[in-house]
Image (tube, rainbow, N blue to C red):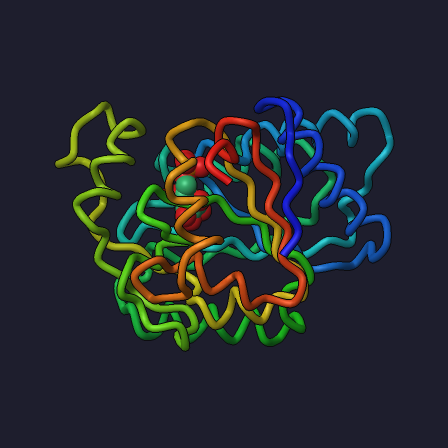
Length: 242
Ligand code: F6R
């Protein structure tokens, strides 16, 4: 486990974008596992900036996103499909045929998840998986108590996650979808590199627990202690307790 200390959010974003950019330069046809949420937005903006300056080329890159809400149309502004297009895909030269997210519009959970697993296997697995971390230690939508050995599956979101995400749904918990399709911990652990970004004092406690406490399904991110190539880039506040 490597921990990189960044001064602030902008510095964290730049450092994370540098690592992603290095991956794309070293292997132009790499598979990037991507995350949504507030934390990676700055890293995506930095990548777009470098793309505009001609420093990075996404034409051969394949992407697989971590998760998607079940039941939200793709075009809904809060679907992860929309989020990714808004923040990255629409702004760089990525091939739309190489963009993959779980199909939240497929009501058949088993089918949607099986198809997503097939995609991940067919592209040869993930070269670099970007992650944020939830306050309860979730990664993707793998909530506390999830088995470590799962691939893509359907999950019920916890009340805490629904509460944390209501900011994206007019502050109304009733509008937040209650289920999602998510890559499992097994899929994440099979990524050849894992990069986590974390910022803000609100993440300090869980960062300490996840990476300096016991490895347990009660803190899903703690399994990353066992990953052979895991890097955490955090700002001073997020790393303040370690
Ligand atoms: C996003 C995801 C989530 C977030 C986590 C942290 O695709 O799967 O695990 O990474 O909820 O979210 P933020 O970055 O908003 O604190």
